Image 1 (tube, rainbow, N blue to C red):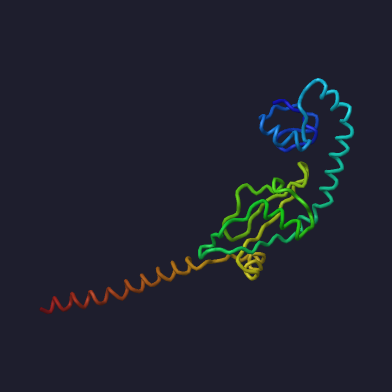
Image 2 (cartoon, one colour; image 1 turned 60 degrees about the vertical axis):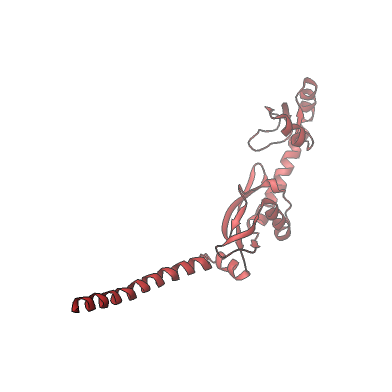
Length: 197
């Protein structure tokens, strides 16, 4: 479907661009949210008449986004979640969780689509992501995910967390090595006793 964009949309185009999009995307998202209008000669003329107003609205939205940059950059996005022995989370941290946390911590409202996470976070650690306050205003942020506040503080300090299974694996490797060393003298004793016969 051919539409005229009424605001800048990342990876699609700028205000006034005529673009070809899938019908479902246009009907379910672009048209109902007012981000685009169907392409027709009448709508092209209507858009030209409203272009200055739309551009002014876009500039105001960009200024509002720029005013929130410092609040988002300085937000402490600490997520405390339950995890298993390997550091794998029971569940995940999604874009919706991050948007909700940003509202609580920095008092900045964003939609989950504005959190450029990629895939949900499924383990304990520090993760880099971006918040698109506006298509032209993208702010990098760090997300800290851990099981306790102490672990969060350790991650913030730059420490690497180790988990139970790694310690158990190290212990079992050490035990195997010590068991192997203990078996060798016994084998030698048996060999000596056979030679004596």
